[in-house]
Image 1 (cartoon, one colour):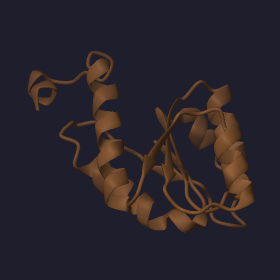
Image 2 (cartoon, one colour; image 1 turned 90 degrees about the vertical axis):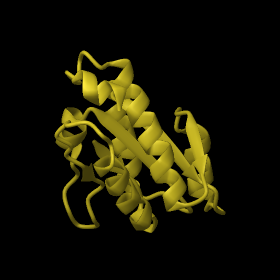
Image 3 (cartoon, rainbow, N blue to C red; image 1 turned 135 degrees about the vertical axis):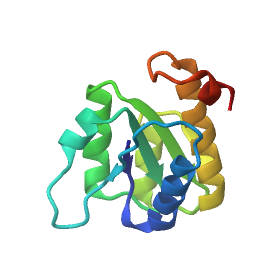
Length: 139
C-alpha cells in the first residue's frame, strides 16, 4: 500500500496503519508513504503497491500530484479520501481536477473506519486472488 499525503496528514497516516493492522486477514502488509522534503520520490513503491491511498487535507504538496499520476499510469486501485477542512486554492483545484472519486471524512478515526471497509470489500471481492482461508473469508 502506498499512502500519498501532504505533511498536514500525519494523524491520518497513523490511523491508516492502525486500521490495516486490525484487518482479520493474514496478508503481509507493507505501507510506504510520500517521502519527506529532501528525500527522493518513491515512484517504484507506487509501481509495486496493490493499493494507492490518496489523502487530501488543507493543502497539496508537490510530490502528491506526481504520485497520483504514477498510480493512474500504472492502473493502481486508488482509494481517495478528502478531509472536511478549509482548503488552499491549490488544494481546491487539485481536488476538483484529480480525476478520482473522493470519499469525504471528518477525523482520523473516521478515515480509519472508511479505509478498513474499502480494503475489506476489495479483498473479499478478490478472495481467491488473496488466497483467503475460509475462516478469514467468514471473519
